[in-house]
Length: 160
Image (cartoon, rainbow, N blue to C red):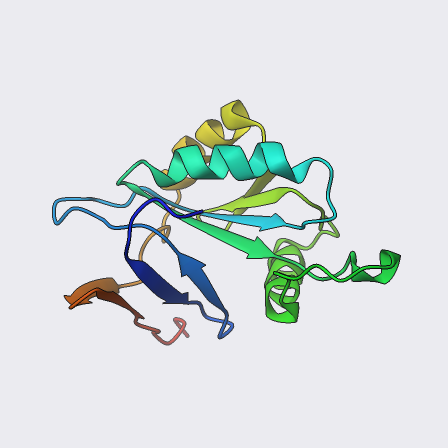
């Protein structure tokens, strides 16, 4: 999904990198991070990819597309998939204490999961998760260096 000429790299707590084509105005106040777990082999994913593209146009939403690799066993390899994205999706499931891992799955603010093509559920999850303590509390900074955007995510120790 290319909406601007600049590419940025986002690095999460699991060491996962995803290419994101988003340029934020200086006044943007992120209200949501949405992560779409998708696959080229998923017949329901194109609709979710389209919704993610719409979400990415909102300067207050950080939208990530994370192609997973667990459908590769069906006979052809997803050329965009990365096992680290699959691990990230499974880590979310483990943290929630469920087995809900599917495509197109969209994780909102690291906590809620919804079907990636259901805009109503996504908007509801954004509103709900914004009210939770700790959501969007990870310090993120972005700097522009020429045509490159550098994104830094600060990790902090969990409270004892």
